[in-house]
Amino acid sequence: MKVAIYGAGAMGTVLGAYIAKAGREVDLINRNGSHVAALRQKGAHIVGTVEFTQKVNALLPSEMSGAYDIILLMTKQRDNAAIVTFLKDYLAEDGALCTCQNGLPEPKIAEIIGADRTLGCAIAWGATFRGEGVSELTSDPSALTFSLGAYGKGNHLYDVRALLECMGTVTVEENFIGARWSKLLINSAFSGLSTVTGSTFGEVSKLKSSRRVAQRIIKECIDVAKAADIRIEPVQGHKIDKLFDYGGWLKKQISFALIPVAMKKHGKLISSMLQDLKKGKQCEIDFINGVVCEYGKKYHVPTPFNQKTVEIVHAIEAGTYPIEFKNIDLYRDLF
Image (tube, rainbow, N blue to C red; front, side, top):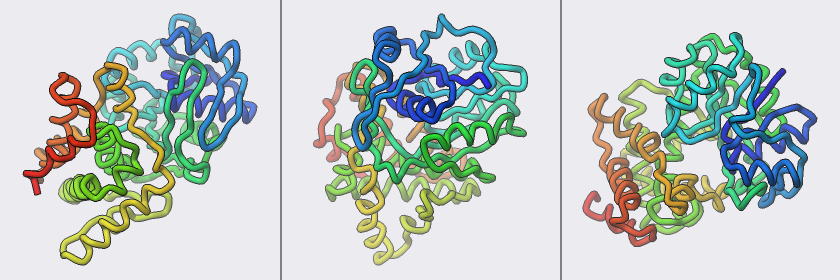
């Protein structure tokens, strides 16, 4: 089969290196010419919780040709309409585009390429771009998991599973929207607050002031999912909606104590949105915490902590606030 990773940046480079290391052919496609040149010349250098260098096939978008059976989409959602329209011409009639993006991108992608060619994957590990040809895997090797699902009938669903299994454990989810919501819950709390504060997931979860905010963001996500009749799927065997939901004082204290334990394997992670802000780019906060707010409005569930996160990040983009931990004080009036 002809396979590509489109948007082979931090995470795509790591995934592509693992797939190539397993002996599978895959094109790593990226618009960054220097990154592509480094991948061609030196291979993909993966550092962090693992370390290896792997020869890969790297291309610029302008160098694409033919039709791909599988395209793993790993760009930001902001440009999805233009990118998916572009990729449609390079996708086989019975091919599959698997979005590995955060949030809930599948419905709009399906409008462009059709439901049967649309797959989705929630990734439970993280990576940081460290320079041309170099990506840092920031999650523990034991936490390399994927939740995979079909939006329509699922073209090449099990072929995609086989590709992802070159790196980690893959669960094919019948309740894929529930799996998506599990990842959205985690990203809303920890990616959102990593972006607001400039901190790692571990720092956000350990420091009590930010942990209090994370707890409230998580609770809002759970409440919205309940109202929307979405059954949140377990993450790495843990029923996060049961662990972190609460009604009374005792359960609230237990959920608060469990947050740093749950984030232990991902403590070194920083949000890809934070990486974008540091490069002077706009980030995809509207597709993370913003989605929770959209669902909250639709199902009449208040989401003030998610909404505040969206507002703060947009203010950082506008230059109103610096990226600093002190921004956590901006939530104080919501308690």
